[in-house]
Amino acid sequence: MTTQHVAVAFAVLTFTAGVEASLPEHVKPDGPQQAVIYSEHIGNAGVGAGPSTALACRSLCPSTALPGTKCLIEGDAQRHGEYLRRTWRTASASTDYTETWAMLPSVLPPRAPADICAMRLQLLRTLRIQTSDGNESTILSIDLNQGEGKRQVVKESRRGAADDVERRIAALRATGYEPAGTARYAGYSCRLLRRTKGELVQETCLLEDPAAPASVLGVPVQHMTLAHSMVNPAHPEARTYGETQRLKFDAIVPAAVFTPPTHIQWKGPKK
Picture 1 (cartoon, one colour):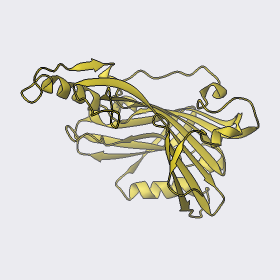
Picture 2 (cartoon, one colour):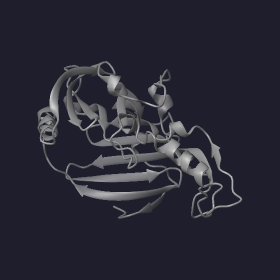
Picture 3 (cartoon, rainbow, N blue to C red):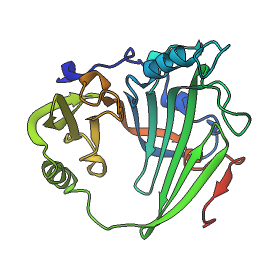
Picture 4 (cartoon, rainbow, N blue to C red):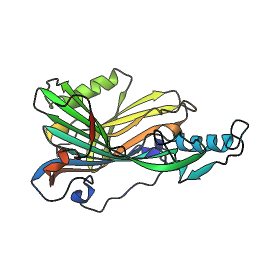
């Protein structure tokens, strides 16, 4: 394993509950059931951003620009960017449910002006549902905190799954990645590729295991990219990180996992 390159700001999560217990809140455990490929991913998409936000708050509140104010920080700023994503997938549909921790102003617009002197760690929940009819894909991107969603319809490109590993490796090598052996994540083997860029080491590991269905070969089960941070973009501890913790190829879940909540306000075409 090559996770010695990783500086993750939170403890590895362990999951003891069944797949059914991990369903989005709007999906009830009863009703028609469906076989799916289920996976759980953890990562951090904003290492260092939370502490930087807290530092800015303490520097500005109070200050000449904001006299008479006091910085209030609620929650652990180190957890900013932590995420847990659960994915359910069939040949014609997929659903991603993601929970992300973010250090944000305690009160956000449009309810009131954002207060940079009062920051709170908040859990952001999103849902992405994609369904396909073979010619077009409908993508539903949903902000569960706001109860709002966007609908997109896109044309599909036709290609077989059998060449996914080699095709993705070729695409990665074109951007500077080189083969770096193999590794194992969530109990399955994957093809590891690595790219060095300055002080940072970027890695990705593409699923390549005879026990895995052909439809998921080439899916990244571990991925590390450059950080979004503009403050210290060259520091290894500031990079993003993601890893698949669990894969189950024969999970049975309610078919309703591929339907959105009923209360969502939609934007975009109604098709």
